[in-house]
Length: 74
Image (cartoon, rainbow, N blue to C red; front, top):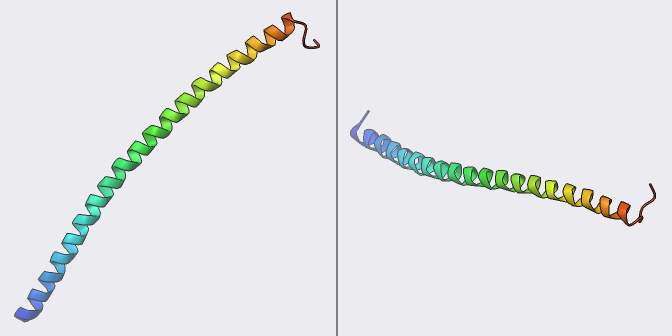
């Protein structure tokens, strides 16, 4: 290979290396963001489960109130 071809190949390899570094940084950022999104989703699921539990207790209490007041046919 000539000196000019070697310099051209080295320049291309440097550009490719710089591109790979940018891609690695972007992937690292995406991993952090995905982890945060997964954490938020898990917290929402926990909150929904807690709300469903509370609604079940409200339903039981309402049923007792209706029975005491004879508002439902048993």
